[in-house]
Amino acid sequence: MAQQAGGQHTLSEITHQQEAWESALRAVGANADALCGLWQSRAWREVLFVGCGSTHYLSRAAADLLASHAGIPAKGIPASELLLYPDAVLAARAGAEPPLLVAISRSGRTTETVQAIDVYRRRAGGAVVALTVYPNTPMTGAANMALIAKEAHEESVAQTRSFASMYLLACGVVGVLGKDQDYFAQLRRLPDRAEALLGEAGEMTEAIGADMTLERFFFLGGGLRYGLAREAMLKMKEMSLTYAEAFHFMEFRHGPMSMVDDRTLVVGLVAESTQAHEVAVLREMQALGAHVLALSEGGNLELPGARQIALRGGVEESALGVLYLPPLQLIAYHRALKKGLNPDRPTNLEAVVILNA
Ligand code: F1P
Image 1 (cartoon, rainbow, N blue to C red):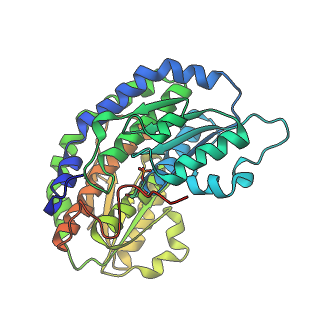
Image 2: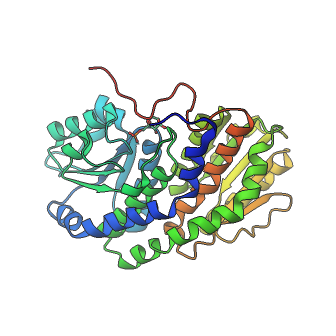
């Protein structure tokens, strides 16, 4: 990865997502039959998604999506939990089939993820699907099959278009395992929307990123949006060294709102089906002095005084998730620049965490 000052890589990776998203969906399409065959080869008891950092949050979102959209039992956990606590993670009734493991990693080289695959193979003897960006890695070598979003490669340390593209790989897996052709057709509509959305949200994300009166950022999301909210939180921390946390919407009332004041931005990843509850939380936080940014399909929630971003995916709620990401990535990028940080090179971080044996 070449050193470059000023975050040019990050900006270019955030603003050039369309081709990467398309490449992800192509990869799923090309492997759909093989994936279907693997899925039907055994009565897998559930799907276990694992990753680290960003890809752990992706695992969580993917598991929630698979369970809610396709009705297939799933969980998303850090790879290190599978590595260190395999008895707990793989616990099952005698004679039960193993879970299908979906390992997610941009680099395909993160130690915990690679070692977790090994532990899973020895303990459960099942099959592994890798979701990644790069071919020919320890992870792809250890997997039964790999779905690769080739155009999503990155120079930056922080994952932006790679996260969104691997999330779309996971959405494609949901479409295949759920045997839902229509879902797949909806996903194909999303790449075209990416660029326009970034244009529409550009000015607002820059203004929020430049607002140094804001000290704390809270990202709220329910269901599959909880994993996405955690990823947005991580972007804010990694790139801009800002205090940020993520919560389920209604959990926020149960303690965390003590931290809310007029130096707080509460970002809501609002879903149409649950918006009455979610907008109520956002209104209450406004009353406590918080600034609010709400992202929703129509961008027209009843939230006077709040900033709003319209996703306008024109697809069903469960297919929309990826569109929440680019505007939130841009806010983290702009805030990093405003603080004089280089978003391409987050403090204390490398692109991959490789541990010594
Ligand atoms: C995962 C990861 C990133 C994080 C950091 C270190 O890498 O934890 O999420 O931002 O750069 O690596 P990977 O397994 O997805 O390659």
